[in-house]
Length: 456
Image (cartoon, rainbow, N blue to C red; front, side, top):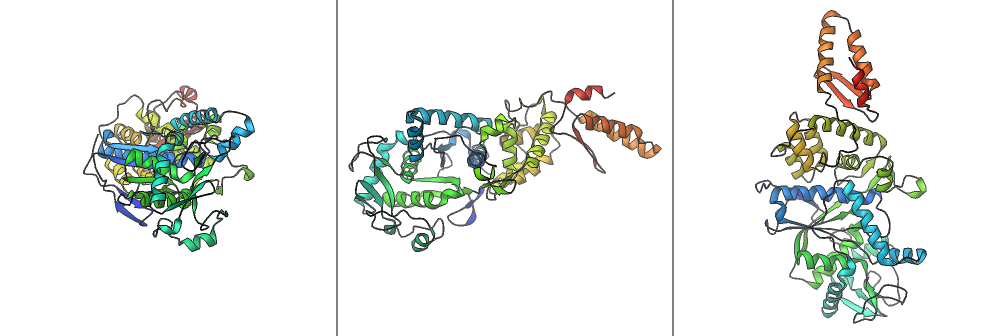
């Protein structure tokens, strides 16, 4: 389904304003998102950009057509953390990275995230990285020293534009790696030497391996071109990773524009505090899944907060998300989705990916078929994600019955039948919400459909 007349607006970190999104080529919309370093399970914070940019991917596919959007997310499979794990465990690096990528796919699949069109592994693109480094040296933007190759930060006049800091301010406020072979403290590594016990590749500068930043520049160019539409990632990557990507890409290929729109999601909190092992509030996606928290529920909690705001994972939000999804799955059980999502949901998503606004629009829908189509655009209520719910039950007849009993009670002043039905519903784990507007029944976390059979 395509909707080319729909106008998306996105906040561009680089320009610091919300802008109309106009792709370079509507027939070939291109997005790159920085992926994980594959040495361990993805923690909950790692999953946030996956969900954020999955929603954007879905929206772009809706507007421009699935065949006209290319999404690239990389795997960093050459890194000192991986090397350290291999040394500590005695396992082969490839075994570790293969296993971790398998874990990552399983966990992100459980959150309902679509697989990107390309998932390049850094080790498959070493040749492209070496070629880009050679260009940077030839253009005077990089230099070889002591088996390393470093990027000359001050050779790029616009360095710091993304993060809004000057080079001198960065030196004063950051922990800069000092090395005797650096011309300037801010220069960063493009290539570094490898000893026999470390992974390495032949290069003009000896056996070595790439620095972290060069991999994304090289792979993005090879798969998306010198200029593409969107580059995304967590806000923690804006500096230095994305700043360095821009510098090396702009200097190696000055006729290209690299990424035109930069998007960054904010970080994750747990019960109002930064997630950390020392606080005992650090957990992986797999930890939650193994504890019985459905992936669909995790995704729904993420969607409740705009990507540009810190997201606070709380037990209360989890319970509310589970209850809402139970209700919606009951309402949409056995029906086919509408041909198009609700305009209000589309409008919210097109407004800088306002997922919280889109969820509010979902809550206001009365047509189950439109609810289903709209929710699926956001990656919830999908087929295969509802197995966590046993015995889906449509509570609408009971809600109607309770409303009728209440109307009768108001007339005859006998509320015993109302109280009896309410008590039975609560005993079955149903939250009863009664207002002047009507009666709403919401299955709670302890919902037991079997107990509804006892309600006469």
